[in-house]
Amino acid sequence: MGHFFWDNEGKRGCLMDFSCNSSLNGSPRKLNGSPRQLNGGPRKLNGGLRKLNGGLRKHTPRSPSFTYICRHVNKQMSNKIINEMKKVIVILALALMANFANAQKMNSKDVPASVTASFIKLYPAIKEPKWEKEGGNFEANFDLNKVETSVTFDASGNMMDVESEINVSALPQAVLDYMKKTYPDKKIKEASKITDAKGVITYEAECKGLEVIFDAKGGFLKEVKQVAKEKKD
Image 1 (cartoon, rainbow, N blue to C red):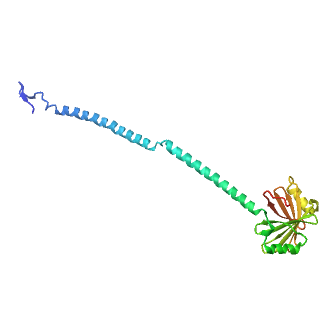
Image 2 (cartoon, one colour):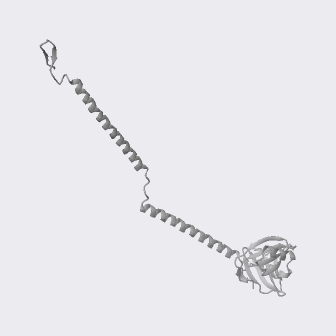
């Protein structure tokens, strides 16, 4: 409470008292409150930075560990090895198929009786032909009047075709022209004339690793790539 007094003139006065300066004292309190609010700003700002830093930490990619790298490398190497092994298996399988597809020599006693009977009927003068098996067919190789000849039968003894060796010069001119134009770097090693069971004639020109078949007039029919082919005895 304030303390009042009256001066000589009878005027009321007020002694100095903290209660009288309450309005003034209130101002510093309000002013003191401002720094608190200002101080709160940096706190909020610092909190924002904390959140920002946290976001950066969250989105910063982690370096792959040594264990992860080793596993990844091992997986890649394993896949590479498996692929190489698959290639080797395929190559071996193709080689085996080619080997079985090529003529396989066989003894006369292993040739079916029906095949032997058909051969003797066609060539009674040939006593000991050399037999080979090509797939399911049987081929007899022999010399007929000093000409290398082969005749092919199916498993039932039906004659399929007769192949006789001829000189390269005996090939139709159309065959020679085609070979020269299409295979300029290849030389014809052997030539043959083939007559099937119906009497249809075809010609065969053989180069290194390649056989080319033509019709009777020298028209191109097909090309057959060969693996190493054994020369007939």
